[in-house]
Image (cartoon, rainbow, N blue to C red):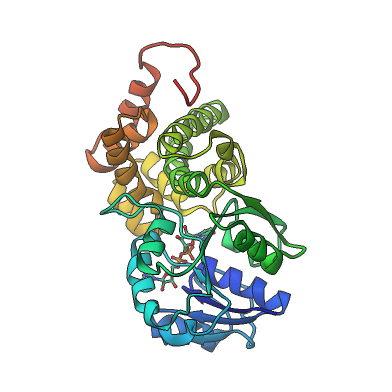
Length: 332
Ligand SMILES: NC(=O)c1ccc[n+]([C@@H]2O[C@H](COP(=O)([O-])OP(=O)(O)OC[C@H]3O[C@@H](n4cnc5c(N)ncnc54)[C@H](O)[C@@H]3O)[C@@H](O)[C@H]2O)c1
């Protein structure tokens, strides 16, 4: 049995908490917000995100960040832009032996950094494992069979996490490409937003297949430039997550995209849906690609829709009328 603290009582944090509790681990969940904890304690579930999923009483819920103290594992389950701050708050209480599992998918706005980089800057003495792949909280929490990748610079840590939190409902595969797993997890949100836009415009399956294939191509291109291995992008954290986020109503990025596709302003669509990590990631990835000279036409058009008020139909037309060329791969 391992002792585990999960930072974040949102959909994913709680889904992992329910899973770890079911395996038999000692689980504590931390939230920055007392009302979040109170609501779960009152109703026994997180009605807004995981309705119908019982949060067992054996899971401790707290707003006291010192709950990370002396744990075998701390899982970071909060949105990207708060990871640095929350890890900073936890730092005085975390011992160097604790393994940190990062589940946040995105890049830090101000620095373009991946989450494991942000965490290792904040908690330099701890070993980090990245967990990424197609894993909607709503399904994971219900025990629907799911497979994801765990990547680390320390193979023994990735293997330890694999053994510790796999069960008959969650299967973990060890991967050695931390950069690729994190870049795949971050960039697929951009393509999922675009997939939603196509859906909202009532276009067909051909359009979505083209988007996903060419989207994977440009995700790989940026990832490889950053040091990732191209084959990682056809694994669970790349293609796997891309498929699930581009096609599922569980995906907030996909749902926000649908609203934009129907003609709702981008910031209003994001406001209605809530955490839409593809929105911030589109800006970061666009700036990063520009600074590195990497061609990312889909990301560029999404950026224009989101931040320059470009009409979605004009963006699609401009993608279709780009100079004709051979079917390029990530390396071209
Ligand atoms: N939802 C999924 O299916 C899923 C799957 C895999 C990975 N993830 C990743 O897990 C992370 C969390 O996603 P989620 O779906 O649980 O999000 P969520 O919006 O449901 O929950 C977010 C949590 O973060 C907390 N939070 C919000 N603002 C905060 C702040 N300023 N300081 C501290 N905590 C704050 C909230 O209190 C809440 O507990 C994201 O980075 C996401 O990419 C989510």
